[in-house]
Length: 95
Image (cartoon, rainbow, N blue to C red; front, side, top):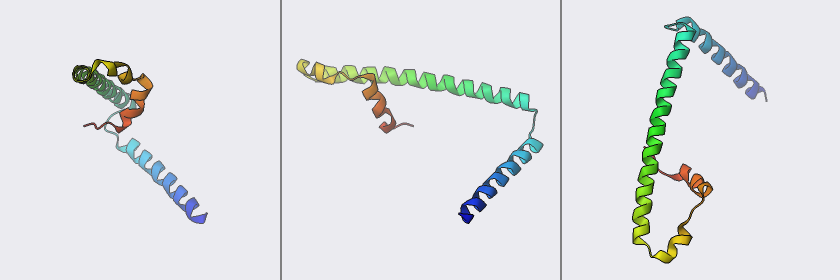
């Protein structure tokens, strides 16, 4: 218990020290920094949205190819619900 208290205290002190040092060494005012970070976050979000659209397009192409290869009676067996796909997304490889 004593060790946990020491580690917690050390973590809080280190965090406070890092925060103070960061504020003292900041290259620009907080408002400018927040605006820059928000702009970068929006740009990254747009990039992720574009990647998602490309992934959706690619998955539709793969689905079309698979449907062309499978017999017609397997159509009903292949219908997936969105939740089934969502559960598998974390396991899919990504760059």
